[in-house]
Length: 175
Length: 158
Image (cartoon, rainbow over all chains, first blue to last red):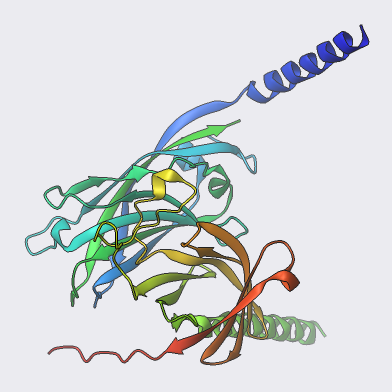
């Protein structure tokens, strides 16, 4: 009898917790476009790194007037594409073997690899990266700045700069 | 009187800023290419934001003997990331300079077993690092000695 009551109370509390957590939570897919990764030459054969500093602006990202701190409850990357800057003498993806995308913060959040492509399809000018499965990135959006880091494995030494452009779709859950 | 107070406040602020910049620059001594004691890899340490990271730039055995293809991170606990090439893999992550030639709060990844350990880096001299990996308690860890490789810069072709 007591056991049944106890189970009912636990179930009730869980239900209450679930309702209170889920109530008011909104979901929006935000797009970060034209993220420019400048690989400054000379580039050596192997993995070269470029970083893009993104100053987090939740109001702009969600297009909503949010003043609450730590407003983002969770976030997941929904797509990540990387393309080469298009111009007459620009390099194409034939010079790149693989791409790895990571996120870094200055705070306590550890670096996270979030997407990769190995091998790259040399014929395409836009590469859709494969997303990592363990992909909770919400805590990054409650910080002031995020470093988006792109590692490109380059086939040979290039005495030049290479620019790549990232477009990312992020699903954000917030109150 | 007001002038003296303002000058004092300004001087203290300047002193603090100088100390902060100096400490930040001191940490940059970690940057460079380093070789672990087994000589099987070379790791380049770079700075991203305020933290230091080390990626594998050279492997003695770069190819997987079974497939003949370049080695990938096949032991990664996240199956979706097992195609990440090992050459270029960041095995040192998130180190913060704490002063006195010590970098802490980072992790070291062992691609041989896919395990990540807490790690402390101490620079015993400008060309030697004591890299201590541990789980839980630092005293129970293991230290490896890494040596700096002095890479000569190529002259640009002009």
